[in-house]
Image (tube, rainbow, N blue to C red):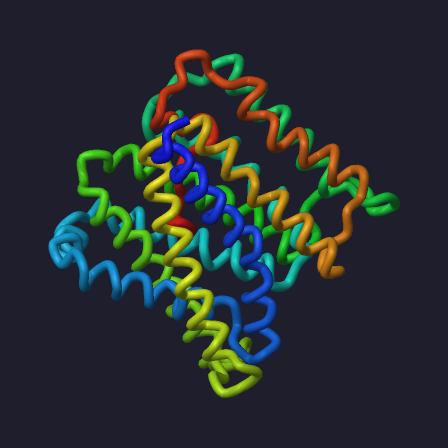
Length: 306
């Protein structure tokens, strides 16, 4: 393998590792008085300002394209929901439920792009939902349904993630920098708007920047998320989509391992079996005609990675 390909793989691994560990700063900041919604907005604001300064033409394109507003909305929803979920819920459970995303992509691609609903697509949905039922199952609790706020946010975040990628496909003629900036801005505006409303109503606190080294944590993870995004952009542009998506599943392993070691998650046998079904569904039943921008299977990038 040429050095450029090794660098591409390394970039994706850096991206996946940063996101697999992202539950750490969001929980830390939450404990320091900065709600995950505030933390999300602040962290992405740094990246958005940096990109807008480097590529001012992208900002002008974002302001002119109405389709990019839908992309920003999907990105903002994904980040607000996922980052809040990992801060308050079982990390492994949240990540596995979030990775139902390819299942929602099948349905959204049919609705918004008119893609055919094949037997393989049905098999992906059935396998993914079977895995979700195992993850959600708890003895003595009756029908396995989402029971916590974190569960619902993880599932909704995965659906928003799928919407983001379907919209990305519809907006393939827009510039890459404009799409990226749109996703970054959405990850700032929507979480900050929601946080402002909730803080004004007393549901959550206003950010306490002086507590527990919060500013240092925000600065560090703003830099790490920016590096992770650069790694994704480099790797995804140089590797096939299926290879990219397989490498990005490292996020699940990093999140599961780190949270289990830290005592922030419980690894049950149903979680392991259900998670395997969720992650395997897009691959075992992949469309034979899938290509790089196929949204019915795993995708190379998403709103969290802008």
